[in-house]
Image 1: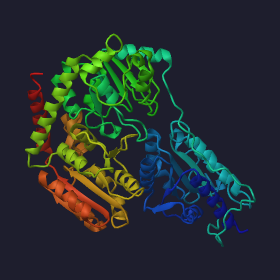
Image 2 (image 1 turned 90 degrees about the vertical axis):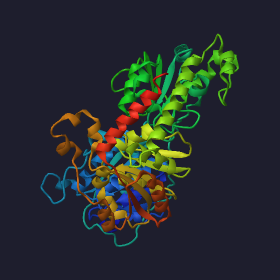
Image 3 (image 1 turned 60 degrees about the horizontal axis):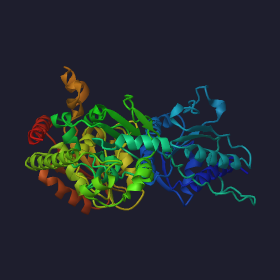
Image 4 (image 1 turned 135 degrees about the vertical axis):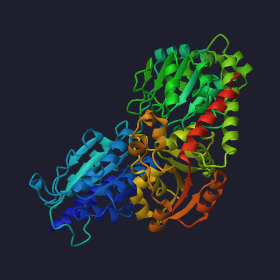
Amino acid sequence: MELGDISFACASSLVAGLVDGGVSHAALSPGSRSTPLALALARDPRVQVHVQLDERSGGFLALGAARATGRPAIVACTSGTAAAELLPVVVEASQARVPLVVLTADRPPRLRGTGANQTIVQPGLYGEYVHASFDLPVPSTAGQEAWWRQAAREALEAMATDPTGPVHLNCPFEEPLTPTTDVRPIANGVVEEPFAWPPRPAAELDPDEADRLAELVSGARGAVVFGGSPDHLSGEGRFWAELLGWPVLAEPTSGARLPETSLAAGQALIAGAWAEAHRPDVVIQFGASPTSRSTQRFVASAEHLLVADRWHLDPDPDRLASWRLAVDPEALPNALGRHPVIQGAGIALTGPRSKDEIEESWRGRIHPAPLDWTAEWRAADERARDVLDERMDGWDEPFEPRIARDTASWVPDAGRLFVGNSTPIRDLDLAMRPRANLTVIANRGASGIDGLVSTALGISVTRPGPVVALVGDLSFLHDAGAILWNASRDVDLIVVVVNNGGGHVFSLLPQRDLPEHRELFVTPHAVDIGGVCGAAGAGHERVERAPDLLPALDRAAGASRGIRVVEVVVDAELGLRRRAELRSAVDTALGGS
């Protein structure tokens, strides 16, 4: 058996083992040393291979596919600095708990530290950001494919630990790198059990914790905050809104911003003076630490903060919680639903109930919030929502929060919206109306602006139907390589680019007072986004009036597949004034509350 055939057999065995564990998408960048891996991926009919020009884009595409499916995806590359290009995506996958398999081809270990071409020390390259790192043996003799298959199983087992995360398999190969035949691993009569992902173990409250929770929530002027959560976690807020009468503030990425459940203008309510007069006794925070500073201040204002999350690295980085529970969101209503005082009251935990019914059922047991607390929040929320929409609809010039609101409302039912970091995700939090049948995804593990278009591309390849991405101009330009490479390929992605001439998120932060603010932080650019799209072969339409956005999105949806860019031009200085006007209008409307 030739050495190239042995290497291919080992790589094929590794890929087969990973595919048996649920992998169906792989991103691959060109390279010589990775030839055995590339052929193994391409020749396995169960894998969709997405060839990307650069490794960073490929890594984020794989990340998007893993996010969208909840199953591991592969990113594979050649040796040397190619492997180093994947560090940003490994960090994001680690922080965001995304199952990602990183396959790095390598020179044989004897060349490490010798100055050999395209050779760096790749084992351990990603440090503590991977669940496990494997430096596989150099294929040299027939039969070694069993070791490589076992490495796939061990990698899947490491990745499946709670919570999930990335793994790294370093794959060294000697030359020659090309096989002489399409040799596949021989089973030798051994039938291996396919890898089965273990069910996520339940985490429930014990009886003492349930008693403490019942005492904490009974009759309290409370509120619930849903931070970002993975899609498979419950984002149900009906229990808290309908049975306890608590306001529910749900970030768009939580899956809990639903009609009749969550506040429609929560950010507008808690950012001003009205919230100072309506401080909660108790806040229960589910999911990740809040994105916006106003929500962070609101959570910190509560007399008692309960944080319930076992998924994120640290949902309470400022150590404000008086009680921390490592459970998923449904564990708390489940515990209260089984609590003796609840069951004794005969309360149904599904379906709406009138205030009178709730109060009568819970009298002397666990009480909902005082009726004035519930009524004031609901009335204020309705007024704030009306003000937001009336003001934004009255402005002809594009305004970032309105762009976010209109884009989210336009996405078809069962659609997917990927939102960029910096300003877009905060504007969506402020302006998005509650709606069902929409999945909102963001890279909030490390919250970088790198690879955002590539991540949206990865989401788009997992199932039919368009994906809409909402990003800023700098994020778009940061990932321009993904546009140039993928614009005319068989993808289905609409990118809404908010072009305000630079990184104006810093105009909302203390850096705005620095004399170097514009040069060092805003970093204004003169890039013609339409020209970039034209060079790439991407569709492009420039929008300069707010009412023109939705028709432009309709036209983009009706265009042929590929990447279609809707560029919305924003006057950044006017936008700052509009934000202040909007804040003032909401405060005025709530002044009598």
